[in-house]
Image (cartoon, rainbow, N blue to C red):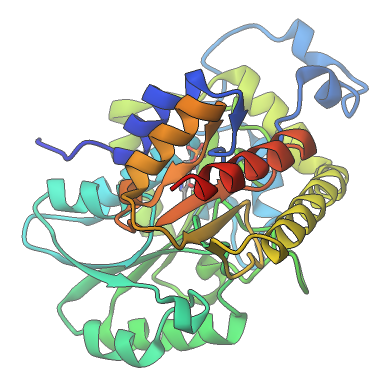
Length: 367
Ligand SMILES: Cc1ncc(COP(=O)(O)O)c(C=O)c1O
């Protein structure tokens, strides 16, 4: 199976190790093991035999995941190797050569390159700045037809930080329902809405062909636990399990254990994370107010913002020069098909964010 290079991953693997001020990350300053052990008075982890564990995820973990949804039972949930593993399993289980898929971009490249590699025909629908990076419902009504098997989007969105309001999600579900179209909503940033309820509605709770993907990496600050999951209807989960048996066996028993503890204590983790997010957006807002060369629709959730720069230079060259001159890494828009923009992770810590943004300002003056 041939597949396109994963442009974001390639760029980050090549350049991020050289960065002193790395603003490319989509994670909120990750937690360490000691802070998780503080939540765990039993400390059972030290007596844990390192077996495969429960092949489909421990009951404790599955109950903790179930509590993130209103309508999901244990049979509707399968634990995966991160959201990256979850997305791939959904595509492998659902798509065949010749299927039609609609992907809303900008998106994680998995959302179009894997379907394309499986022989699906992918219609790409771009979010637009004039719509505050939200989907255009009238456009979706035209693009999604009876031949559309799957609609894919990310909510909250990476890289724009836009959050689809629940009433708009309902309209999207109506369109999908009319056309018998599955929806895969990549919800790795769910729980990180800056305004109103931190948790948007989950597509699996809204629609019987809704598939929700979640993970420990972003909302719970634990990307080093390679744990994600899929919530969807029982029959699809059964199909997914068949594919999963060929590529996962089980996730690490250690990752399973710590993920359950983190989800059980998510209120405390969220409290800490929202402080980091608010600090990050304040820094961003204040920097933008005195930066004439950049504009940005401020994020309403998630961990990233999309910066539009007012200089005639390809984003990759800008980012390479910026890194060479100042040790600051931002993600070039070219890596997610949006040249002219830069992705900035705003939950990377006060000093790194402030210094990196100031370095960008200095660099833009020289172009
Ligand atoms: C939208 C989206 N989906 C999936 C992933 C992969 O997440 P995980 O670390 O859980 O595999 C990422 C990582 O950046 C992401 O941004």
